[in-house]
Image 1: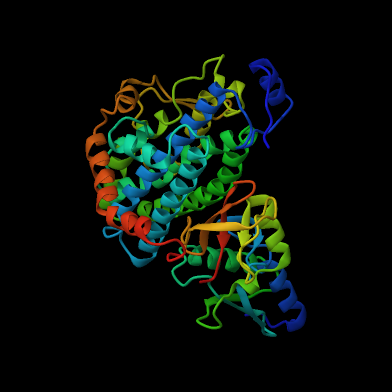
Image 2: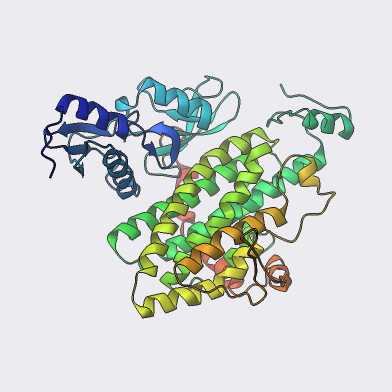
Length: 160
Length: 308
């Protein structure tokens, strides 16, 4: 155990920066922080960091991989003595937690839309209204839509 | 509305300039047919692969791996769904016609889905060797793909298959640390799956390959195959497993592994729908389609707007 006292604010910021480098395993280029998975970061004077994450869906198969990636990223910081990563049961993840940045990247890089309250969801390619074709896409948090104008087959991230 | 081209030369010049073809374009019939066949084969393979994953949900050891297999099943079926929609948009066959052709043995799916997955070791080998061959193949199609709707869906599929690859590497580590019996089981799986996975790349590319001409492929089969051999031989050796290829050679100077002569007969048999597990696989897929008929009938019978 280190006897050096660390600045907890700086350590917390550094840990936050490290978590932000972790991308969703299925959405390269989009950080889990931008997807709204990070809930708590605490740091202690003896260099212990605790990360609290929330899952999009509790049955998500990527949970262990994301936790391992987060742990590795934070553990790589020189001032960190110990890191714990926990999946929290509350609050429940909602689509509002996805940042504007992430929405833009998903729309332009992956033709992946995020469901909005004002239905119907606009097409990430042309902005026209899309129609839901299937409630389930290739994962639990995605639906399949089709654009009525450019005919693009798209996926829409959703929280329910 | 879409664009038109006066001749194939005109169209190929458009492709040479990096042009992207979209669904409402009046593309040449030969190109339309080639893109359609390509996507239909991909869609069929996703569906057949997803059904094998499904078979393994109850047999997968441990909750964590079971969750992963559940999700992988949903991934593959979801990819198939997206691809069938994009294929159907080309107007060659409807989605129903594609499925009926698949179940009647009239259309193809990739060679690796003509073999039985008998043990958990087989599932690990598939996740490593087959997904490890599928990902570079898909990346090579994606890289310079001239058909826009397919390219955009491929980008998401590749991201998700990359996740499967990581799962595969995790599973291999786990099994490599296992008991002697578990290691022996996995060695048997490598012996059974090495060659089918290697043959997934196909024979050496022909110089006048139209798929390359039309930017549906951007890498030669033999180059991708060589990269695969170079990746997996050292990996499996490092875990203490052997490769079932007596002709395998190693160039110490360049540290390059090269496979021995390849027997293409098994590939020809799977392409003729006569692989070791072809009939059972098709029967299972067909049964899955039949037992869910009532859902489709109910959806078709429901008044518009009654079903979300």
